[in-house]
Length: 478
Image 1 (cartoon, rainbow, N blue to C red):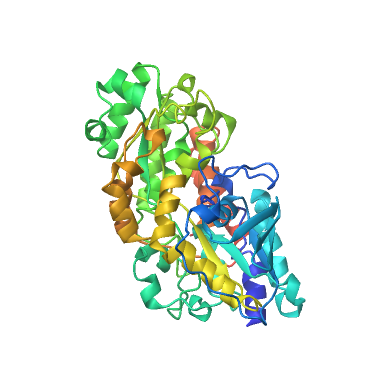
Image 2 (cartoon, rainbow, N blue to C red):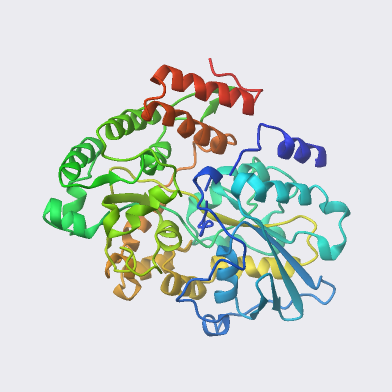
């Protein structure tokens, strides 16, 4: 089985260059993941309160005496660290890379996702797991949706049942968040505190100026389907606004609504819905309704500010909270100037999952962290209140959606959680596959040549096919 993992981790079939959830927050593929920093450079959410004040009534399991005294956690940014620090009862921060839970020392190994560095570091360490000293073993590691299957179908991720999580504990989670982490035998191998359904995030001032109203229901009429969206882009252009910041902003909406997997019977299949994205994006790029800048680039983020003149972005809660400069004076988010509406199609994007590593010497503590952060309704409501995250608990989200106390300040007091609840119920992972990350990244990269006028459509498609065959020699493209 170890040889199987070695093949999975080191073969070109599974290794792809890597946001995230979000991690992203929370929590998505590397080429689309915002640049992360070292733990010394990344601040926790401004509204977070000490853990002791967030879950005073939570009952925390006591680690068995024979269990380890060092808890090693591997992740790619500070998102999970902030959740544990701010919401797990008994966590105390020591410094940027260390904390304590009781008499257990918590060690954070945070490697940014740039150039696939996080996965490479994780893979190398997992391969040494069986022979590592107890204090050096990985206890918890985090994964994102686009490459979750790389780890789920291996023995290096332990079933969550091994850590004491029962069906009753997990009953209130959104199904798709469990589908992501379920292996080929039907065994759940990881859990998440969040869901990542997406919405269309629009500039309220632009909506009032161009559409005559910033009311979500009225704005939805102008983006109800892709034809209407395209027509509105014309109107926005005439008023001096880009419809989106970049052609890639809408990609996830299209890629989440495909009819089949990227790879079918060993052959790469380009779904018709992706070609619809290409058609719309080419029109918008040619007519200067958007740019062809990369996600996470400075040009992409100009629209976070009024002078950037961008009407909308597509994203889940983590994009709003972690990526849209909410803490920066003068940003649209800081001014409460964004709104949310459903947009042309439902979609989800990213997410961060907690995996317990096989071989951990802290199974009780690992299990309790999973249970408290992903099953405890009180703690999860506290995450919503303090971090404006969408949590993976149906009763908690239904309560929050019906209570204006949970409104988002970045949305000027609008509570978008009802939209997120509806979206989470519709998330469908049936077309998820092991090659998603690499195929999505290479397709967007190849199509940029077409959008920029440096290649014909046929030439861009050949560029994509060549890149895929180089990355995954076992696949065919014809």
